[in-house]
Image 1 (spheres, rainbow, N blue to C red):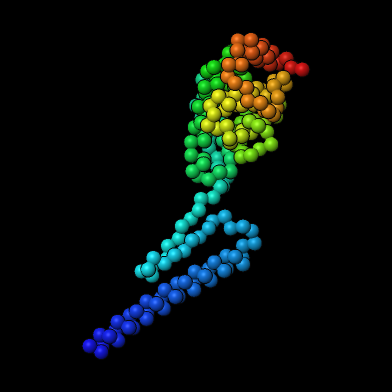
Image 2 (image 1 turned 30 degrees about the vertical axis):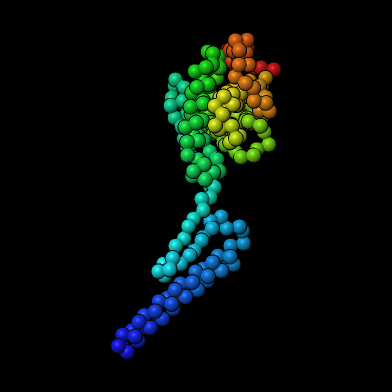
Length: 213
């Protein structure tokens, strides 16, 4: 009877010491992290004892550089690289939406703009970068450049996304009449026959090597 009591007391005492040792070890690790890391800690560790002496940790998702190459663009299997600084969950489906918008806008375009789409995405390594809270409203591109910047906020607005990608592509194709920074998102009905004919004339002149403005 006395031996059994001593065994139980010793067992509980050892378990308490084990739990206390784990708590001290975890506190020491966190203290070292705080001392050795002068910048803000992106990953937050949360520790708890579930009562059985087991310590569990949970991890908060953090943003990181993401990059996906999309192929199968237009009717000539052109490609582009989509980049951004997002969490894995935020990045899910991003490249697919960009590809869908580019192909849809290509199909809606006249022959002239299609020439520009094919040329831009075939002749150079185009990069499409998505950003949160940029200084522009929907897109930014450089005349005859190779990079498009897109506001992440319009990613789920297919009409705004098609409009922005089309405008940015025309800028990179050499259309100096198109703004390099998108300020206003125009509704789709405004892209009427007159606008299409104008874009066709511009694209035809570019295809012949004529400068615009």
